[in-house]
Structures are given as structure tokens and as C-alpha cells.
Length: 468
Ligand SMILES: Nc1ncnc2c1ncn2[C@@H]1O[C@H](COP(=O)(O)OP(=O)(O)OP(=O)(O)O)[C@@H](O)[C@H]1O
Ligand SMILES: [Mg+2]
Image 1 (cartoon, rainbow, N blue to C red):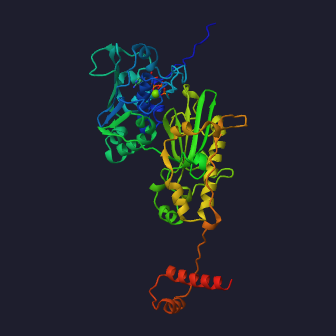
Image 2 (cartoon, rainbow, N blue to C red):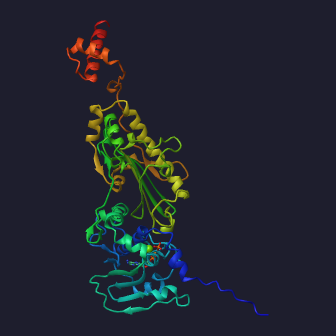
């Protein structure tokens, strides 16, 4: 008896039409930029995490209704990698990459982005020793029997070692978006300025249709003197190394404390709240920006929910690993996996840090816009979160007694003194009565309510003191 063999081979249509449906166009494009950056990371000394690590490296995006091109000078794809891995739909060594904190995990990003955008793609690459093209034509996308591609050695026009991907025969819906400067392109620039802020700040340049994208970064207030005099503001910091993932958490104030008055004014303005909240960075990519929800601990356990009075509080958590599959990111790498065990453990410290600053804000709140608060914030210095960890003196660190380990720095923040405490008096009176008192005290009914109130209180205070 012959045993029937069942066809369980994959269908191209699945990769071309199904897999691409679940990803937003902007995210697919970000995947291509991620690849450029991973390339740049492999080219640079991984021990050099200093400010200018990516200087000179770029990714140039060009898009309109007819084509999408991304070109970089990030080293290119070696012929060996191209033949054995780069063009496979999926890979078998999840996340491992030569001891580098790259972000590529699944081996699908580049292909998915090409299939999502158009029916014809050319990948050209130049390394120090090789130069070639790989064409993915429309016929290949529908042929289930042919899973091979041709690598053609040729002049590519690339001047430096790098890669260019050119996608044409753009899909209908995609063409409209790629051509849309007002909404799609400007939105994409905005997403890139946040997502790649750290690397742009370290020298990487990204252009969209020849416009250079500027980074959008948050820095925290930091007063070095505060270690000795306890009068300034320093952030709460927690660091750990957990199963191959380096964790660095800082939370503090990124701007002056708000006063009651400002609170009201800011209430209407969304922009002013933009930087408040938690930013989460995985292998140099900002995967969550200025979050103010339960995802990052706001309104959970004993932490209050976000409110405009906390507009000055910002925190940054960085996860770095040479094995990208250990990062607590979602599969699209544009968000945090809220159920990840390591992330849940870190969240305890996010909440503790938040609590330090929400308590502090609440304590100062009843002291209004006192000069003490102003002078406090004026003496602080902004510092990017990475530098803060290095600046904390060794003896200020405490080890974490809990099983998760690591160590933290808890700031001792200046507390308000009672004599600076203020109270606001508010009450309503009839206009006729107001006019009678105004006439009596000022000979003028046009006087402002607060002026009149002040005068009445001052008179009462003099009288009370005389009778003491
Ligand atoms: N611009 C580039 N520069 C250098 N190498 C690249 C570039 N683009 C792609 N590659 C190579 O091609 C491989 C496949 O890229 P692809 O985005 O499909 O998967 P990945 O990055 O490994 O994983 P993920 O699906 O998580 O993005 C990469 O691992 C890398 O080796
Ligand atoms: Mg990738």
C-alpha cells in the first residue's frame, strides 16, 4: 500500500497578500529603515555607545505615486548573507546577530515591505568586495513552484557600500498614500523623528524626499549639586542586567514644575503634555513615546492616573540586548508587550519612580507659585537619560533586595517648608453688596474682585494682629 503524500508547501499568495495586510504602510517602511540601522550597527564598533556612533551613516527615502526607494550607506548585504538568509521568507535563528543590539528578529521585514508596496522590486547592494542586483519580478510573486531568485553581479550606481531598494508597480491604495505630502509623508516624518530619535541624535541621518528629519528627544532635569545639599532635583534611577537584557530606567522632571495658574492654561493645550509620561527604548528604537496610561503604570496600584498637574514628569526605560528576541516588544516592534514577564517586573520600579515624583508634585501643589519652587527648578540642568546613570556617585546606589535584583538611586527631593504654604480664598457675593464695599474701601466700583478681596483680608489681618 502506498502512503499518500500531502502537499503542505507554502503559498506565495499568503506572503504577498495576507502577511502584508496586518501591517500599516508606515510600519512596513520603518522596517526598512530598521534594516539600514542594523546595517550601520554592524559596521560600527559596538563598544562605542558614545554620542557619535552613527555619524556619516544615512538612509534616504524617496516616495511618490510611481515608486518607493530607500538607499543607505550602511555596509550592504554580503553575497553570502543574500544567498543564504536575506531573501528567505522567515529565518531560523531568531534574533541572534553577531553580538550586536540589532532589532531584526523574524527575517521577514524587508520582503513584507516590498510586497506591501508594489509588484516589482530591485535590491541593489555594494559591499567592499561585491556589487550585485536581485530582482523580484511580478511573475515570481504568483509562482508557487519557483522559490529561487537570481543574484546578478553588476554596476549598481551605488558610490559607497550600502543598499538600495527600489519598488515600482505600486499597489493602488499605497500609491495614493506615498504621494500624499500633507498627511502621510508628514505623519511618517513625525513617527521617524520619535522612533529613531536616539540614533539620529547619535549621528544617523534620515531623509524623506530630501528633507532631513530632526529628532524629538526628552531630557530630564538633573542637578549634580543635589547629591551633597539635597536642595535640587535629581531623577529616580533603576538599573539591572536580566538574562542578557540591560535595563536602564530614569524618571524625573523634564521642565519646571507647573503652578496652579499654568495648570489651567495648559489644560487646553495638548502640545504641552506631549513629552510627559514614559518613553520606552528597545535597542535604540523608541517603541513607546510619552505614554500616560496603565501600560506604563499610571493609575495602577497606588500611582495616580495621569493629570495635567503631572505635566513635568517624564521617564525613560531602555532595554538593550544582543538577542533582539528577548526584548519586550510586540512583533511589529512599535510597541511594548504589556504581558512580558521582564517588563512586568520592571514596571514595579517604573511605578515606584513615578510615585516619588507624583508625591512630590502633590506636596508642592498647595505651595503654589512660591519663589522656592522657582529657584529649585532654575538650578537644575537638563541631561539626556543615558548620561544620568554615569553621573550618580557609587555610594548613592542601593542594591535591590528583591529577587529581580539590580540597583537603584532614590533621590531625596527637597520638601516644602510650612511657612511657604499658601491658601486660596474664594467666595461669591451679590453685585450690589460688592459695589457698596468697593465704594466704601476704594471710592470706585470698577475695582477688581481680587483687589477688593485682598484689601478686606489685609484689613482683617491688621485688626487680628492688633488684638492678639
Ligand atoms: N539595508 C540593509 N543593510 C544591510 N543588510 C540588510 C539591509 N536590509 C536587509 N539586510 C539583511 O537582510 C536580512 C533580512 O532582512 P529582513 O528585514 O527581512 O529580516 P530581519 O531584519 O533579519 O528580521 P525582521 O523580520 O525582524 O526585520 C537582514 O537580517 C540583513 O542581514
Ligand atoms: Mg528587518
